[in-house]
Image (cartoon, rainbow, N blue to C red; front, side):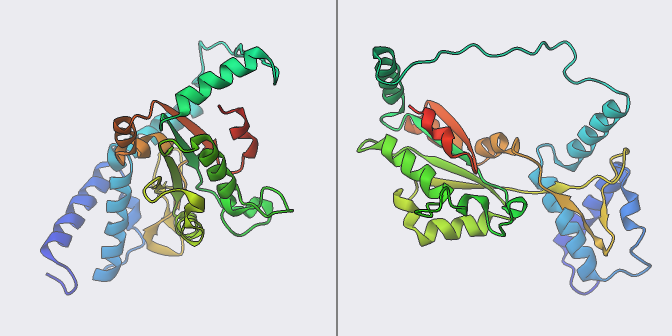
Length: 271
């Protein structure tokens, strides 16, 4: 074997090269030259391996889905064909009325005893807001500087009271994971118990270069693929694949409440 390669790594490289060939991605090798170094090949195939492992069904499913969606878009297929939009019908109850007290008591009964889990989607940075840090570290208001993450946790702890812990899962990304963990560590989870907070990290997916769903190579580095965030929908897959939902169900959780990273009023409707 060439220097720097192990039998296991060589076998993995061959398998991933065959996969790329099967998926019509041979253009990724065009900029390699005649004698790529073992180090360059290794980091290329390591990225391919990671991308293949992080998407349900692997790269084959990702490319197949991409091709179908792009073909449907080009053909003008309406994914909502046959659907009829409608406004949900709800109820409005006034604070201080018997009806309000009744529904609040029903909500507290459902939440109490650890019956509700909370999910915070927190994979974004505050760049569009002129802030270089993570969005959950932004202040909710200026007088106290209370961050969004602290506010959410304080709300959950207030609902919890002296009862069983209400679990919180936070979906981070490669851009926010380390800073989110550091914020929690520096503030002792803002009062939540050890193990009450679960972090699931969302991985990025490969960028597509064209309507044929060809994976996009980095123009500055032929041994690297361009990647992008995959959207909030990953949270459902991550909660399942990480075992979080199974653990919550076993502990008695019956309801799951989803929150965006910077939507402070979202918790005001609870319980």
